[in-house]
Image (cartoon, rainbow, N blue to C red; front, side, top):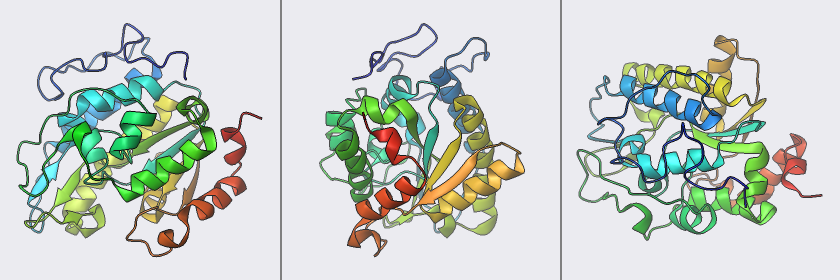
Amino acid sequence: MLEDNTCAQESDKLACGDGDGDPEHGRKLTPEVNMSPSSRFLQVELELNTHLRRLTFSEPVRYIYNPLEYAWDTHSCYVQTYCRGGQRILFLGMNPGPFGMAQTGVPFGEVRTVVDWLQITGEVGHPHDEHPKRRITGLACTQSEVSGARFWGLFRKLCGEPALFFRHCFVHNLCPLIFMNASGKNLTPPELKAAERDALLNMCDTALCEAVKALGVSMVIGVGRVAEQRARRALSAAQVSVQVEGIMHPSPRNPLANKGWEEVAKTKLTELGVMSLLSNT
């Protein structure tokens, strides 16, 4: 395990489980003076939350969940534990899945992986307006998210312990919001109305650039083509000097991923030189 793999580390960090799980209430932005990488990263996310609250969305969107508010405890535990500074690779997803980050506050956060492997703790609350068929049960959620199980399952097999993966890598989502229609069907950002989608993603692009600068990574790997293309465009426009690449998304909605996502991902990561970072030898 990481030498500093605890949820109460430096004095400028929020302890895991600290607060009410909702940064909207009483969570203050602090000056960026002598802040750790994890604190700078969380600061970027708090600022993004402030901007996102100003947005409105029309049909087909009926429900919007932001786990960076109601699952702040578990999310900040993940960041404080594993965002270490000096990491070279940032894996970037698009936005939360209904049984992943929406439940746990962790990107690609399939529950069993979050609890058993990453050992994340904390309280998970509820969105302000919750769909009756899409209840948030947090770390007690019994439904597995395939994308998250595949994503973290690969690195668990390769690394054994989280310490080895997070020595060089970190995982983040471009957009923290999950959208649903009236029936509870998940809507991805590309399915939103163009003007609303652009306003949302422009804010997320700005936050991504700030997060990449705070982390100091040298490569961003988009998980899925949309995340890759968005990252490349945003970072290039902001003149942030970082290499942007991509791997196939592990979603079961992707037929190719269902035919052997793990091997495809390993081949691509080998080409990028990332696999050599995930070995003790």
